[in-house]
Length: 70
Image (cartoon, rainbow, N blue to C red; front, top):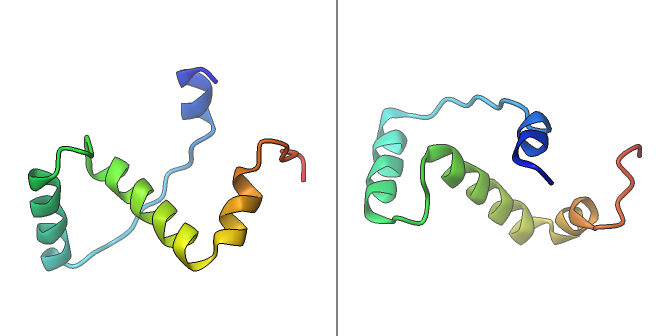
């Protein structure tokens, strides 16, 4: 899938966090080069939480044979 297509499929999701949580996230990102920015970190955190708590939902949405019209 091309980069343009992947970006077109994305939606904006805004959240508010406490100042302390934002500081904690920034400190984490400064100490771990895995994530380029806070958006990459948030996407990863959301995926991991869903995979951990409801793996059947994650499997359902990530199946390659998934029909996008459903």
